[in-house]
Length: 108
Image (cartoon, rainbow, N blue to C red; front, side):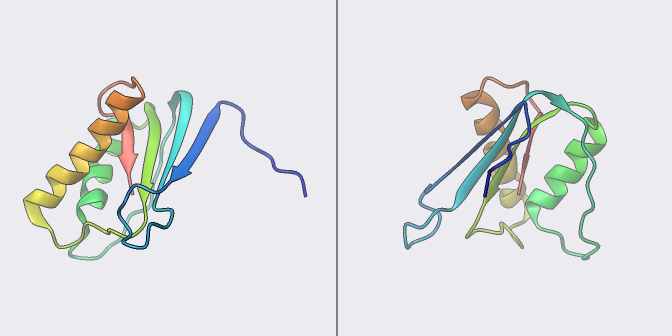
């Protein structure tokens, strides 16, 4: 079966050490230009830190996202201010590593 990849996007995945088993646990989706963004978020009264970060980001930058970092094995839920700082750090690390503008990477 042929694989189809959207033009202008790059995808990567690997093991970042989040899962103790060493299994794949991190994925990146990167656009070569700013993208329109829309999202549907949980209605839970206690959303995880990445949800709070991304809600703010999508409201602030609906036409300027460039990347999404997705981890498996760490929901960063019920972590308070430290969790929000971790979400911000994860997004900023992706932006710096990929030479993207600040506040252009979402985290999941």
